[in-house]
Length: 81
Image (tube, rainbow, N blue to C red; front, top):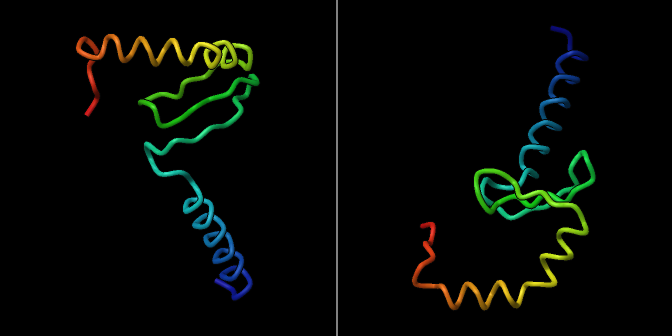
């Protein structure tokens, strides 16, 4: 293997390593825009939660109601450990 080939391979591996280090840890909260233009939220469960902008806005408008419901039904709701 020539020096130039080895240097190119080393550079490629360094870039790949840096990209892997910047990847969020499994289970970490993160967000990205999906291919179809929705907002995908990662880190809540096994799969991302993906909704369009209008759906997120509608959900966020009801955040107080959701919190109240969670509090009122706390005894019936399970917690994932």
